[in-house]
Length: 114
Length: 232
Image 1 (spheres, rainbow over the protein chains, first blue to last red):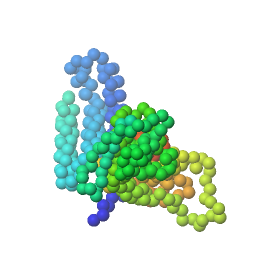
Image 2 (image 1 turned 180 degrees about the vertical axis):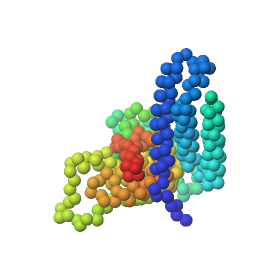
Image 3 (image 1 turned 60 degrees about the horizontal axis):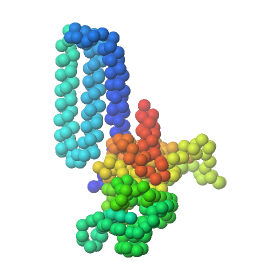
């Protein structure tokens, strides 16, 4: 059978990878400013840095962006190197599950800061 | 001068091998193609390679010299490390010695419909463009389809049947950028695919090796920008 390509596909992933990269860059800059403004870092200031809801949400989005970025990057690698459907699909799903787990874990960590 | 050249004759049944040649040849002002012709003339008439214009216009003598894809006819011998290792362009099937099977490369080229699609009645003389619109095509039309870029692209190595490769994408953009063309949307439709366009990861080997100094990566970036503009 002839290989058929999927028209109107591929752009979303590419765009999402760029968008997540931009968010990560912006967040890291903002976080660095907050970090430097917080003064000498000890447990109390580090704890206080993550106390506001805005920082929790920002950090959670950062981790989400990181995981999306990483998953799309891995997907690119799998498309390049893993040419058989079953192992490729298994890798997609395995890393998808792993990264989703990381995200849930991040929620638990961030919201444990009272 | 010492040369080490890839030899393969499918009719003999023997595996490909590297053959050493030692030829008395003054490299001053001479190109790799001159040496290949001299070797064929004086040492080994069975050595096979493509060449035609011998001045970097026809694009038929793309080979891999000391690990870099070049046109043999415009690559100076002076400064090349000896033994000068000459192999066929990577990843394409070898027909014989330095002659590769370009069928896949041309198939990708045909796939981007490298011709003007304009359904308006043909004008009396020609379809005119403003000088600014015409300038958009500079850096695109000069491609001679030698295959140096596409065969140096790792994305093409991994998916040669599905990824179009820098040469075809550059030509795809050449017609997308043409104001006289009316099939822009269909062209973008064809390219919006995880393989055909989006296997390009901006490695830029194509830019490094292009004997005409063109920039396929930039063209790919422009296609991506157009896709984004169209989608949003």
